[in-house]
Length: 517
Image (cartoon, rainbow, N blue to C red; front, side, top):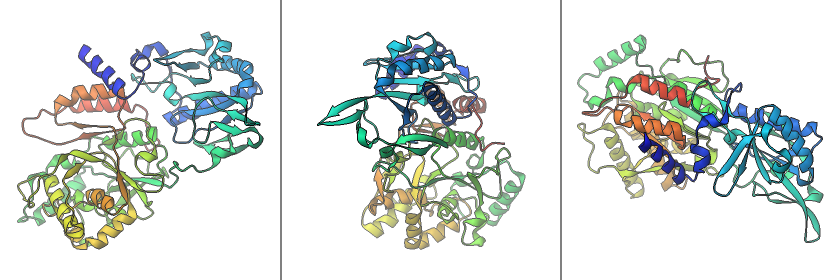
């Protein structure tokens, strides 16, 4: 539809993208099927090919990108331009293309048909091989390629310097007398990098970051029997109907695709913990050392509170996971990373969490069983913070991945012990509950452990078919850091068909991750 095309272009312009480059038909790139499994493997494959082509021509080259960059960066001496043109011809035979950045738009074309010598008059060349991941519209081009820079030798204040054509993580100007290459690791590769780039920079996030998921398979007969027994035991206890609705426990295999999104776009995650009630997804490779299944028994301090079907109680116990890093991100299984993202979007380099307030406000008043659990959570948390700090809260929290600090959670549990005990004692979501990830959002700001930030995100309700058009726009634009496919039933809503959601996820994340059998 013409209106959708216009909307896509507007999104590109607002995001600062070059419309000519990003919206043109993907077929122009004549992509090859990718042998590499994920964007990171495509990154390393491209860097390997470029470095080998340069080495075959006897050209000194150095890698100077950070692991968080979505494209590798290679420097060569400007004096070697002629020999670089021969290396480019070799890459052209391998199916590589080049992108040249211009003021108003980018040009890209096959190296095999390019005048390699004239290309070398440019200061920066983006070298890439167009690739398709399975038979989906997404074409991986220069965003996961190799950016080749020509560094000139210039005399400045009586000394010779290597001068880069643009800014980088260290400096555009490196004294030639001190220029030395040292080995460094880059996504499992050993590369040669200028010594200054091997140092930690003030902007670098170097501490380990884990991810924690909670997951349930509501179709599991054993689990359903446990829930039925718990509901029978709880007869006479008043709950909001939403606390036990089947949709809260339905599994649409979102977790499979959420894990793919992490492996595609957040490879810096150290370890993933999957918290379940004695359940394991049938497709999950439990032998992958990067993921660990954690049972509720391992995190609840009082076994009498199990089994539990209260997500608030489970989330408020996650910091008890053995081996969990100080810095971690709590993910619902309906959260997805939408594009390459760096750890400094979630934490500052010196360890503060970056939290994302929403624009909408939560109503005041006392908790009431007749109102939705999310309203009552906010009211109960507000009461704790008012008593502790004399400060109230009103803004809600964006439905995005939640960066957390384990030590702050430990402190909150000590400080609000009664509220934690009350919450974990409820088998189902209760109007007197708190939930620790939301309490953290406010408490950490008030105690100087968190700062406000913002992720570009989309929220979709799979119970509302009006969101189908927006899903299609996102799939084509791929311009959001994160997105959520929430399951929020509402009166008069027409759900999106499961086949539509399945098709969207398979198209956005087409290649299985290493977490799948």
